Amino acid sequence: MARFLRSRREALQPSDVGIFPGARRRTPGLRREEVAALSNMSADYYSRLERAGGPQPSEQMVASIAQGLHLSLDERDHLFVLAGYRPPASGRASDHVSPGMMRALDRLTDTPAEVSTELGETLRQTPLGAALTGDTTRFTGPARSIIYRWFTDERQRDLFPPDLHELHSRAFASGLRAAVGRDGANSRAAHISSLLFKESRDFADYWDRYEIGVKLSETKRLNHPEVGLLELNCQTLLDPERAHRLLIYTAVPGSESWDKLRLLSVIGVQQRG
Image (cartoon, rainbow, N blue to C red):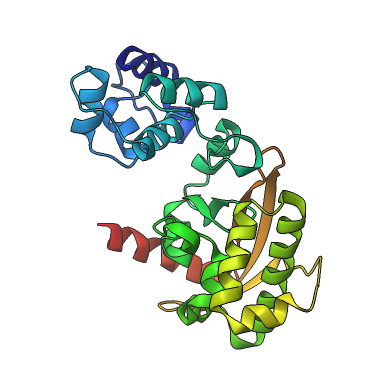
């Protein structure tokens, strides 16, 4: 496993992950600390794995490393086997973001963007994306889905003006119904719908409308707690094999929302500092 990690790290170039290499760079590929940052772990822990001196990583840690190294599905599965685990599911149920979509996300350094599943489970965010909507990768269990949070946590609705709440409720119930019909009774979508039926009378009311195909507008109005109301355009790129979508938020240049996004980028940097 240590040799495999080292070979994949050395094969991955800084430009592949949106890093400017600099004139003094001598390391082939990425540095260990760069892979550690991309994998959301300490540089010391990752370095020990490459030296075959660390403890066996958890399945969650292996998945993070596979994503940080931009591994293909075959490479990810091989890493799981080397770490002593059975590879996770592939196809539509997979949480592994494709290398191509990861490369696109890595280049959006000054843009709010995220990769999510069809159930609204955020897999990756740009820093400005997290500053705009909050760190939505931190949720676990059914709360990973924005659909579940929308109907069970009133705070989820604070980001959107009240006049949009009805349309969001209809669209989320409609999208979940379509996912259950397509993926079946044993799918994650079916599990979330079952939980919501028990926990939210509001969801049950919208579910019983049997609506399909209700869509949200590409123009998003977001009520940010620090910079106020923003009007943004949301472009969506789809990965049909995994049902992942890359959401990219932009403002009209020179508009009030454009200026607020620039301010938000400064606030986000200060908060991370």
